[in-house]
Image (tube, rainbow, N blue to C red):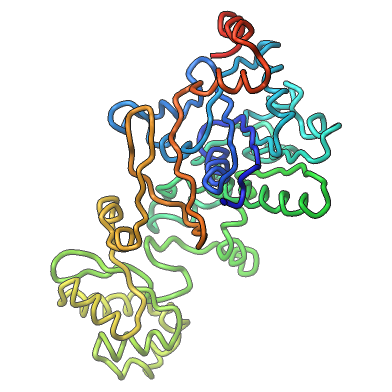
Length: 394
């Protein structure tokens, strides 16, 4: 039995942040009913058509194991169907535009009136109060506003993170917050009103950069692959043109690198290299010295020597390297997931239970489950046909 079997989630969701949260709930066994617009559904379906020429990559990533119902929530009939779905739900989660859910009578206060066990999760860009409450928020914009872009990139050029980290961060907190609310409800019987904003999530993830700025008065400088307060911690060249990332976290690690790889035991006690703070002050000299040695070794030899010396390292992979990664293959992390365009490969989620495997159900077609869900709610065939004819359901 998966841990969330028996839990029903109704999600009025789109794009990335909320679908990422609910997909994780679905992976753990929850029934996730995805409410989509009749005219096109979740717009992430059409961000691109790169999955076998017909399905968006974001949608394929985020929406397995869900049921899709297509409703026109501008119509009274569509809103009535949604209300019936919520009546049978344990969790209602939404990430509509600012204020949109409240205008439809879907605020946490209204929904939980008479439903004390219901858990309502509202996701937004900047939260429900404050001067930025009504600002539109997309991943890149929040990365910029929360300072993440300022610490990512080269000294000359800030860049956004290549993955949608603001969306992912918010999705993770919505997921973990929902789990916490379910645990508390199991003890007290009381649901919850939860609010998660992308801005708050990224502000939390700024971590060390935030504290450095507050307590030194200076934000950390951008160091490309490097680390602002640790050296050596970067990518270094090899004789066959591939880069290897080396991460020395402390002075013991430096001693292992100096003696076991650089063949320079004198650097263990040299005052310019012996401590991490000294190495950071002499970053250019340290990196040049490490690179001069690594560039004479083929990648595999360098990785072997680093491993033997106990120095943390990694190959600088791209997407091809990840797809072909032996760690995924050896641990049997790939599965086949059904979709409207055929079976697709997908990686098992990171949470691995010893006695149950994540549910890797199919990715739904838009409105694929509309008829079945309406019948489950008590609508007969004639009523379902009328809803379809009027465009309230699709």
